[in-house]
Length: 450
View 1 (cartoon, rainbow, N blue to C red):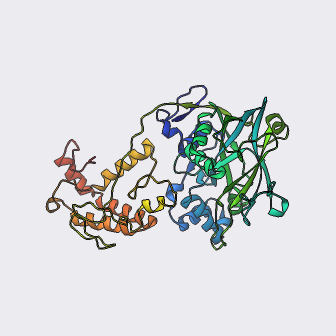
View 2 (view 1 turned 60 degrees about the vertical axis):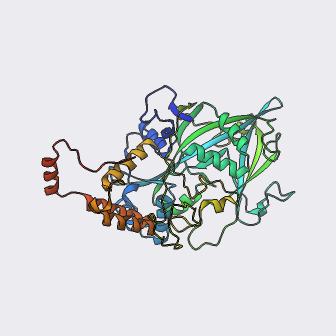
View 3 (view 1 turned 180 degrees about the vertical axis):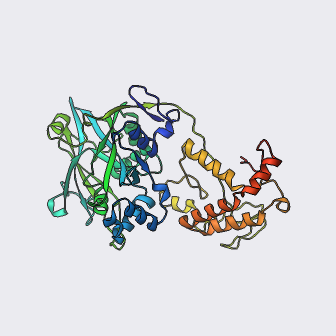
């Protein structure tokens, strides 16, 4: 596993956990520690916003009334920042509001024929006919609504998941590379990296500019990476590797489909293999980090990764479920539908999708901080101990209703149900005094069981 550190070996919070250094929050906190905003302090207030109305109130207070009054753009910002997690919403001590994203630049370079080559992004064509599989369609022309954007590869990070695995997944899917080829790119990542502040990227973050306009500032923290492969590596397809001047086309899904828009075609990107010195002379963006960038180290470290498998049954033992009416017996025969009423993941595997489990499993990546928060919330729920008979468990019926409502609800409703259940479990001041008297050492009945 890779681990991100400051090049001067300054200790960083969370650096003992390699996976935590690959999280979006680590880069955000690192930019604050490095004072990329100077003496000004910005706090992330995204967790306080769970409805469009709360976002509207925040923008109105933060001198962004123009955006707050535009219902269409307000809804788009909520979707982009809150639902799709592309941007953090921050506020300073003066009450001003801004958006902040994280971008990873990856310079893909190759050694070949005595010269150093680099893969340069020429531009993009969005929508229309898919020409990636047709012969003679390179280069993309102005007739294809071609937008020039000369730079190295760039990836817009989201606030959930890990930026490095997601970057590798993006490269693999865009260029249709094999697992072995992506592993080569990963293993050849240079130790030297840099962190800096950057502006919007024309063909990646243009929808942010359209939403925010002149009403709210948008800034990006940029991590600069480099990977160098052999120009004769047979693990890469001929349509990817090439000599000087070779054109490459990648294909990806549109970043955003605005409400009411017709379905868009794939985003077609054109790339060219160029001599590195020629690319430098042309001033290709992000080929070299800015002069004020902070040097970092991306180290490889062996570490044990633990996982927890959580299974949710469709019904209690010897009971019929509410979906297909099947009985939960000792035969342990797998149902066609999950507890959430959807088809099992194994059905999607038939179509070639890689899934984490054969029987409806869902993979969630957690940092230690996130897991500790999850464990604390489980404790706060004060759930019955599974081994305790229901007749002896206080509030057992309320707990059943709680889980029934969770399973039936959408994500936003589930959050509200969860919060209301926590509030119902919060003891009053009188109960707290009684608990302190009865349990002077604070040893209550409820605890998290694993």
